[in-house]
Image (cartoon, rainbow, N blue to C red):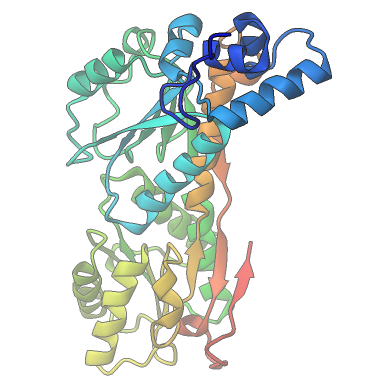
Length: 363
């Protein structure tokens, strides 16, 4: 009797045919087991699965995509992976994509306010991706390309960090709510001259944080005067310069909301150099809750904004659009999801200093 040839176990070239021979069933039966389709006896299923494990069979994703007309690939168009927030958001995208069985195609752009959109979309069309996560923050006019005629040519797309817009699926942190939490906390601590070091106001997120600060002051009967506002660029250097300028404009400032932790770090350094005690003379709050913020001195009160969850939720929304047999119906309708942040209270905003390990999350 001629010896049956089988590939070496765990070869990269094991096929459905090899599994069928090993288990003594048809190729069609193996395909049904692999794809969890059709009525198959438990004994047959067990025999096929045993052969799959023995041979180390791996499904041919390319062949599957030719049949299903789906690539099982999501595109992520992103900027700023050297920054804490964007990098953690993309980590969330990767985690959720992996759990749902998608591969990722990552397209990084060098400048958020002037992406070469036509070139990017041509590349994604050539890749035949099933969906797109547009993880570039809204800056200046960088959303003007979004028009119905362009969107109709794209696979399902979810946008991050932009204003809610009819007909688009958007996932973002509720920046306005986070800034309101900060400002209310400082007011509750007895602060009445609450200054603001904003991010660049061409950014939607920076404008939302500005509005949260302004609206909360107005509700409290305080004046959000222009002399209480300095615009930074998210860097620690601009935080340092921002606090110096703020104190020159408004010397009696008794609290400062720096709109990210990097600027808060710079402001903290400037306060030390200027002899302003934090929090006794001036309270200080950041935004991001970077891992280092708990180790500033004093430890920094800040806003935890669940950036990993932004990425995970974006993929969940995108997956529902891809799986929907009727785009625009039910769970595939465009939607806006705003994730509520938390205020993490530490010593930089409290008049009574507490042990550095103590932090309180306020939602």
